[in-house]
Picture 1 (cartoon, helix red, strand yellow):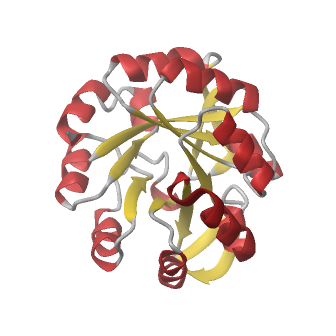
Picture 2: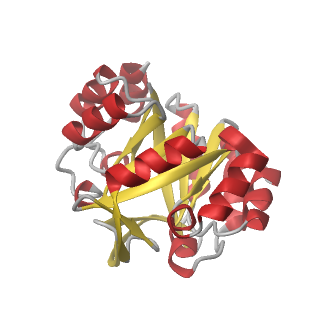
Length: 237
């Protein structure tokens, strides 16, 4: 299993939201580059970047910072947030990003998702944010009427290879990850599942690894010191 420590960006700063609420935002660093370098020093080979500002407005808002992070981290970088057209996908890939995550657009614009998959294949992942069994969109500010199971089945049939699945109710809450959800998903689908939301301690890492989950995103637990990232990387391997 791979560990994906996360940097959520807003106005060039590393921040965290509580359960996806932009009104409950904590700034953890004015210099995200330093955080990426610490990830690297802890042995992380993957990094998960989210342009929270971009997710909210529907267009990239932290491109310059992301370009610096790609160069500083020098590992596998995936980016999501506000990616709504092929031009934005191409822009990120040209910066050296390894994988681009489509969220809202994957839900609302099936044609765009198809075109992106045809053009870039495994460099496209889908971010599926779940709230009460339904898919949330637009930076978690809206809940769609699409049931999670229906959406997973559809994107798998379209050829999506990797999914970043977030249980919004657990995100930033430090209550542990939703192991039952990821057990169900890992059994039902062949796509690489990356668990996001609520990964709070090394037991979560061990449990997800035992379920055969492809990856685990570590967010708030890193910033609060609840998880030793070096140990988490070792446990995952």
